[in-house]
Image 1: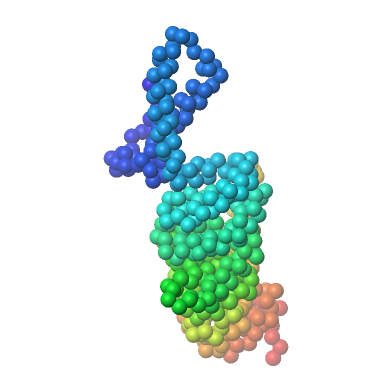
Image 2 (image 1 turned 90 degrees about the horizontal axis):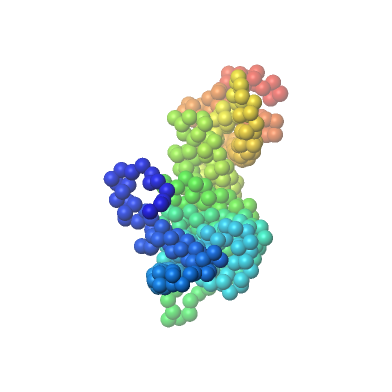
Length: 445
């Protein structure tokens, strides 16, 4: 039998894994090789060159037809599996013309959206993958957004998945769908933000069981906690969802209005930036991997900080210094990442990497802008006691203050000048040294 050569034999564990289902379609027991073989055989049988068979081959042809008929019946039985059907459509939708065709069929669209009401994780995963593919096609994205708007129960289904599923792959894909929806349509995002509040106000009729109330922010937080350790890209997606929510006032209120939700959001994000991302013992280049998620996290923290300063979990001194330390470290690492390599010898290499560097610079600039704005907001509320503590513990050393000034100036000059006034009262020598390094900041006394 002619076939491609086999790859090198894997380890024993790999053999067992392959035998256990490496060749399976999804979570089924159907073999990919078998399916491709049947479809290839069917194509060969119906091809024009095989349409005419000689009488000598008639008996053999009948036997082949009978065998093929049995195989086709198996394919038909397999196609009754909803997961496989949606998965096949998802693969087909990668082609633009087919995606447009699928999207233009209103009945098929309703059937596919109803798959979100299924309880089978593989089916939900394939449905999310198909929907994300369609939402990524500009010609049909608005069609799917409108269909989702017309089916409010989709909100409950997606929130239920985010709040209760332990399937990381499913959570990541559902998160990508929500992120794409919110990015495409602010109106839909506002409807989903308000949906939880409306549900909470609706009282169930006497004698009826209360329905679960899904609020978008707690559901997003629960999913983020679930994917945090297993899928960094998934965490990035959910942090970006939170950032999108803070672009509208209703979204900020959805986070901070309920004290528990605000506290949970703050604690998770604070822990990420102060104990996980861009730590003191990490190489500076790690910032390239974490720049997008850090931009989202700092953006959300900044929004909470600006709107909820009176909350207990934001009391001055408890969070300011750790945040200052993290923000300045990010800015320090950014300087390292933006340094151009010396002695570049290959001009063609520079050309091939030019677009990548431009993209990196773009994301780093976004992170820098967000970090500087957040840092300036913290500097504005620093007290003499907090500055004294920061000097003692090292968060406000000369090196770190210099880095902060270099990035904050000239846009945040008033903030820096006010900080220097406080610093003069605590450490006049340090304040003088900083003024020498930044002559434009010399304060008239």
